[in-house]
Length: 474
Image (cartoon, rainbow, N blue to C red; front, side, top):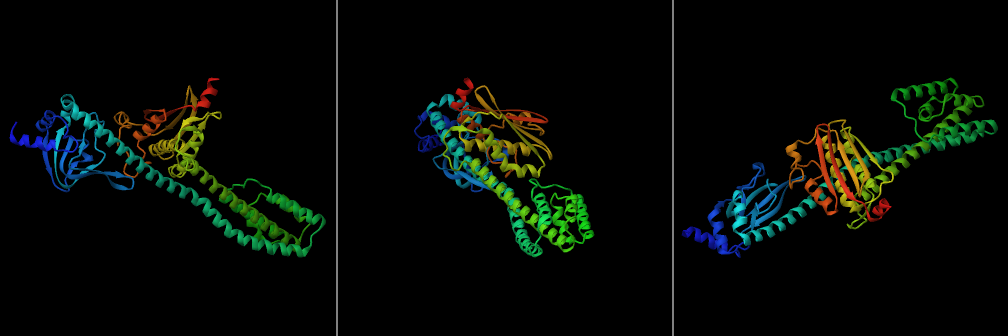
């Protein structure tokens, strides 16, 4: 062994992490490793390269891993003198999740990935040390990915909720403005009608028309052409009977018929008919605007309930009985705007007597949102996504099926690998299928995928909650 190698062994012996390994193991590293010097700005490992060169033993300096997230590039981990990084023994890491960029002048020893099997055989204590480092690193990456996923999901949740809330909120604002004008008109028409003092058959006929006008539960949906024809028809009738034709537009929005107006005209005429029709139109408009405001408010309330259930912000993260069908529906409510934007048909079919599964509701909802979001991304415009939930043996099984182009075999083999994605930066929920898989396994479930052109099916199986298991067995 030459003096240069001896010097490198001494430097390895002073290393914070691997320095305690037997000297013969450090000599093996010095003999098989390559000393590299890098300057600030150089890239040690590039994501575009698609592979990690090997084990990095940092002697001095500093470099950091930069990963592209949905909200831009993030610096998620640093290595300094005395650290180790890169490919570690038994690691599943094949391709780098980002670019490792040098911050300060750096010296490190690189043990090529092809030499790692021999390192495992020849350097037992060093291998044991590196495996512990790998576990800590995996924990750090998992925590970082989960935090990033939460932020991305929060952003998508906020955007989806804002989009969904915009329509009912705008409807309330429009209807409230129109209601203010309608109430003024109602006061005027009521005053004019009161002056006439209708009684007997006249009052009864007017009240019958009013009940018919206000009695429709569901609004009549007509095409623009049909609506215009109806307005003209009613206005012409009012003009022919000496009444104010301006009331035709309001009456056209109701289901009152010309035959009912004819019945009204048999007992009313002239000023009485005009005042009655104006009052009738005003009453119908006021009631329908109030109904619109109530429906829009109910829509907002239901959206808030869906978001509250989706996030489970009022529950702690402990496993318990979970209504899977409800969770799927709540997750879908957040993604409706995205589905509508692509004209994607999303159907949910669940067994009415579906028992509860055992799991953490908030985490499961993140999984449903991810799988549904991926399916919507996968299909073309006007595509179809079908979701089913049923009991199969001791499991609640949820299937998310889309009619997209399918997953190529080489991609399918890797979709559950850490850091693997086929999406561009900023697309998807940010929750990688590797993390989905880990969450499902933590809850003692399973996930599988089958794919061919025109049909991709993700299947999630969750254990039944104890009470449901007992009921199923009985």
